[in-house]
Length: 412
Image (cartoon, rainbow, N blue to C red):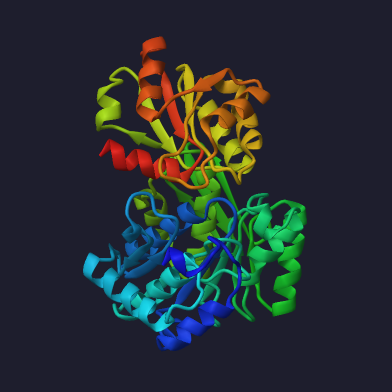
């Protein structure tokens, strides 16, 4: 499938429409769709919406990308990861129906996911945008029950544009005529674009700071909208930024008519790996018994900001980073918010990632923002070097979901 198109990414819907038509237009037979776009927080927000719906007794399909360890993670059928047999069947059908024509890997696998969703009954389908929104392969459902836009920031400029307004325009492309759109906190430039698109489409907005509000008060999450106030536990997903993601998920559940029990399920049950995930077993932990090791897949400047905010609230331990990033990212922009907190950074090359930034370049970017850093051959060597220097270190492995996936695979 990777060989079917010369480019990894080529934003267009023409090839998707052609293949969907060839396999019977499964996008028209899906259970009610909730479509989610945004730069940061899409995965966490989707996980919390799914947890809330399941707490209300509903069955939910979910599509997300990229995967961390196995492709199957991208397709969840009525709560369960797709089986090997079912995955092979839909991939084979799409590959055969495509007839060797040009199509990207993400496009053909998205078509396969949509086909899989029609074969298992469910109450809802959660579709997470892969990149952008307007021309993303998931943007093929005419009448979703709800659209959601998480915070928009600068990322993927080579595909989406150089300004926040241009990127927000691409994200706002998922807004559908007459369909309510839940909007997370946005910078003014991005919100203006989203509001303009919603007006053009006659789509009601349910926006953070206008129709709904969320806050952390006295170790509780307090959510307020036009129908009342909810006093809920803090999100089980770690990090101050998860308050905002939880607010967006709760707003979505409220827009769909769900009660407090569903909203509490969203914040207390959701699970989303590689988002400040504490590693508690495996070879890395065995090699560093006195250290704390965390894993995070954030990779843009906005992710660096929320990561720094989270780390600043944690108990006092020396902080070390093991970082690998892709060559399409603003590496210095990601690291700058972290610089004041970090004792040292070890740069690694992401294993088996074609777009990885060489470790030496990651180190140079870290040094450019004032972080003491050097190269490690791999994550395991980095951990060993850190604990030799500081046995009780807090070690954060970060910078890319591809690095996170590699760590989860190798650490067991």
